[in-house]
Image (cartoon, rainbow, N blue to C red; front, top):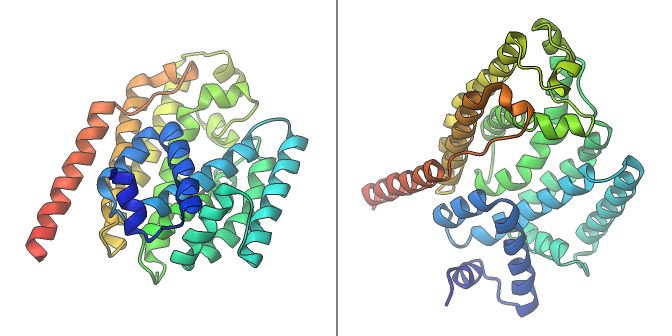
Length: 306
């Protein structure tokens, strides 16, 4: 029996069609987020893995709808998807494989329903995103889109009853992760007419959007990118407290995720102004080393308890 089949069994997913639905989402997640999927497979309890895969697939699918194509097409696609999810949450049934896994995972983790409702209510903010005038605008975007999207997955990993500390830790992490993404994806975003660095921040370094589009590697551009990456690193370093806030074994995955984001920040810092021509990825061997180190520490801690 494969490890994935064992995970489905551990999660109590016995229906043949539903197992196929979860398998479809596993293939999708493994394809577009290979490192994240590997981390989840190595570090999560088997009973949790299929549900995290399903939530990740929902997040990615929604992100694609909001980001891909001309705006009228994106609006229509998102509205159709949102209505399909709301209808399924109300009725408990769907003819869509992805939504069926969402329904089953929501039944297993009832707190996901409220998180999903928040996400559906705010995600359309991504449709209007073209850039930020101020840092405050960026922070508003994080609250309206980035955090609710991340909570689709994070809510499955956190404590069953959160007094606010876990969500605050997630907010700190996603602030750093999103800022890092905007710097790392500069080349792609600029080509699409979007810029995730606020205009007031550009002005502070005497840099214009044209400077970035033209790939100018001026001292101001280098300082701007370094400043944004260091700001992202500061938030990510603070978010290293997040795993402890899960109050359960799932925290090991978040520990690895934070560490891998820090590896990405290091790679982006080393790449410097070359980010204007393309993004970087965390080193594969370094990421694997993080995962294995986290798993070893988790096993040692478990042995102490038992």
